[in-house]
Length: 94
Image (cartoon, rainbow, N blue to C red; front, side, top):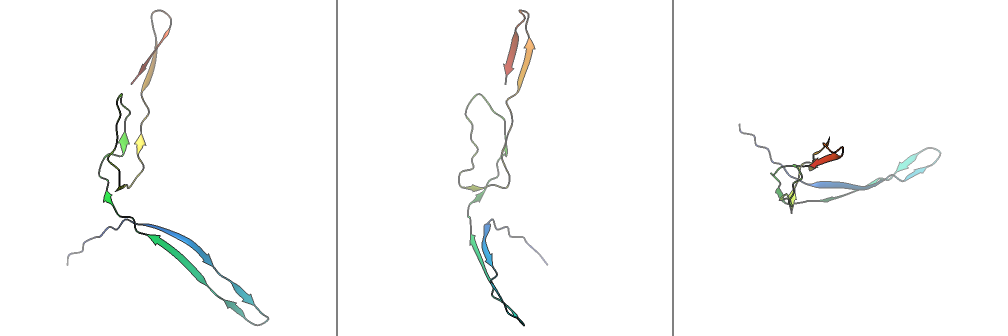
């Protein structure tokens, strides 16, 4: 037997749940209404990198209209500091 998996990407949001009650001496009546709303989000899956290292030029990830599975991590710009022969501080960025 061959079993295959189907992955469906969708976003589900529950809107509300209400439970009104009427109580008398010898009985309890419950009326229940549960509302749910869902929206199907369609799109192509993003297969690129989720990690970005800043550069001296503009960059972009090809994510427009695509479904992403994780957050994008943008790394910090490397900075190093060193004293120089004149007694000052030299800062290297990148």
